[in-house]
Length: 439
Image 1 (cartoon, rainbow, N blue to C red):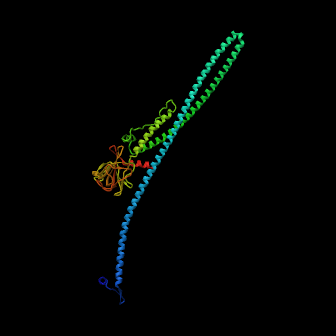
Image 2: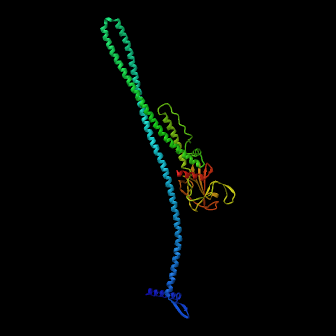
Image 3: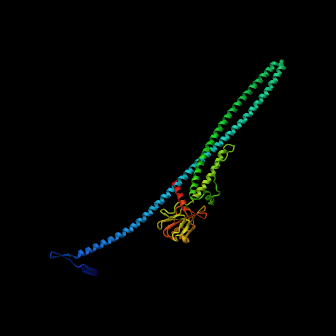
């Protein structure tokens, strides 16, 4: 009962409020002296106000939603584009390196198998040759024995003839002895002829084996030379890339403490010794030297910063002499300024160890990464640092965000490359990297 009275009371208050805010209105219309009016009831006024309020609320809601969603969509599109670009770059690099590494490994394995097989065949042929030489020596000894027997028989025949002349009376007995001597002589001659035949056959067999051995050595040398040519081509390619950066491959290898001894120089084939397989051994020694040099170059190449630390950028200040952007005086610029969108992602250009991460005077927030072999990279004026000192970072790891901290006129990244304490032009490294990725 009380609830019903409360509802009636509330309805009465609402009805009085509506009557006060929306009284019945009339619009007077005068036409040629006649006066008429248009009556607007309460419900029409309430409906019109509600309709205007609903349309206003809907307009405000759609406008706000449009701008908010537009910003959200733009941010998502940028993130998707960046992710796709990074994905394609990484896939391309991995495919290129994997293909090159697989081809080299297959060639090395195949050549290793071929060389092992050839060495086994070479050993077997050497054993056959030694056996043939032993047989030939035995045959020569038998021949010498036959010659000795023949000389002895000649002497005996002479003695018999003297006995025949001096002992004519014993002719019949001597004739029997002579028949025996002739039979022995014929047998000795047959043995000699057989020994000569065996010696000629052995010499022909030795000549055949020597020809086959020479052919095998030529095949082995051709395989080693092809592998040598490929290795020299790869070494020349790596040294060309290092040269594009303005550095020398020899200095780079000496600065790399992880390599034991630097090797290099022009290729001069070693002279072969007189024994069998001497030329092949010399070629294998030269090939091993070249492969060690190539491995050392590949090792230091993995530490070179050959990519850009930003995906989208423009060069706003180059390396070298320039006018200072703040006081307009001539000054030395030991890096390059890369203009980019505020808070864009900054990526490390080569694997290494973070040696500094924090505020660095006029650099603002700065990161320094040591890549080994005397190479360091620096990233200045960052908005935010995402790594810590002592942390190990991999190639293209995200390490910070573009900002304008320190002595800066706007959002950009100050990028430096230092080799053995001396600044180097980062633009040359980026161009060298483009040459590598095109290959």
